[in-house]
Length: 182
Image (cartoon, rainbow, N blue to C red; front, side, top):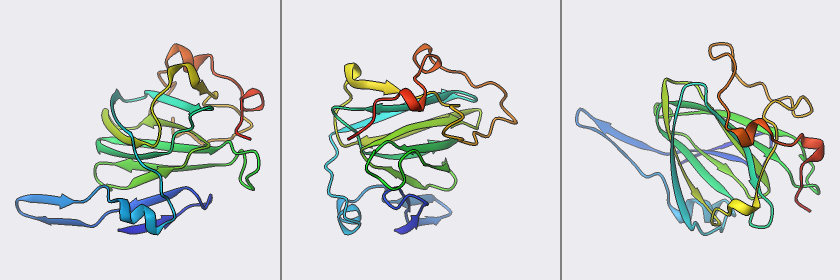
């Protein structure tokens, strides 16, 4: 497993070893000892799988009372994935990390608790899977406006145009009005 550090030290990109031949490939996508060696001792309690078409933007979502750490990857297609630091006591508060995750690069993105998370589908379709450290709590979910100028996220929209959003994400809060982690 190769560890790729990002501009925010707590956010990591993990690149698993892939063993392939003419039959196909094999890779381990999760091993608790990898995370423990990185100081991440979170237990995962829920796995999620979403499928989205090109141009769908989901996020920027977070839970306040039950913050979720997420270990995310793409098993088909390609997405632009973003994590925004909402931890008020952090030196990187309000900053973001973005990366392209795809079925081709097989990278895994660690988004710690205390971050808002979202992604934009770049391929015709994408299958997105992720492990969560706490259960989804719909009454606790919040959303920050994906294109808030204060965040300055450079979403790659040139080949997409206007993204497709849920009603909740269309009516998301500005970062300055968002509920933040203490």
